[in-house]
Image (cartoon, rainbow, N blue to C red; front, side, top):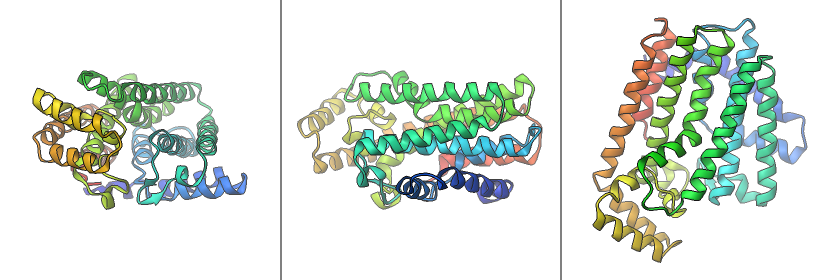
Length: 323
């Protein structure tokens, strides 16, 4: 089964999710509606709602429309975090297009992100499932916590690897976890199966972010849709950087380069090249593969239906992707 075959299992439902998201922003202030509509249809891979829809096939809810609302809520929450991330990072490009942050003032952009947060909350409320709504609220807390950890750990060259894992849990894995365990809660799955789906989402989300951080060094700007080394420019210590600076002489070299030229593109490009050509990339890849192996193990206790293999295909895709 290929990734596209896996996606085809829920293609009709993904179309329904997109329709619901479009409706959620269509009857609002026109400039806001236009930009949010562009964000929704700007070429995202829809990995999170696909995971939600596949996970929802194990224990379908009493009303299928509730699963559609849940998947739309999760993608809306993801989109809103991207809007805020672009303000925090000062990003002008995403997926090769100008960000809202490049077009509007920071304050207006933040309010647009807040609006989409609110729409996400309205969508999840359509499930009429108190526990799912509580899980959604908890995930939002973790996401904000992750952003704060990232902001306050910038340029801390001595931080332990555990700090990185705490940050990417909030940044990415918490939302993957939400995407896979809330459908189980919505469908009243047995506790051990809900827990297996939660662990699967966690391990997959951790691998996904590690690969993103690797691609920030190994992919070119055209592929990334943004400048390479974006996190490094902001002083964010990702896993490839962490592994690279474990050798003291390497640490001294790049810390001196970055700290003496905090915004110098030629210097950042030089550091990116050093890390790209080092063993740090393969070390980070090994960590991502280990997380995916755990995710695949998590699936083994679930019912043996075609959606289980589809989730395994998505997991393998995560460590093989080049964008």
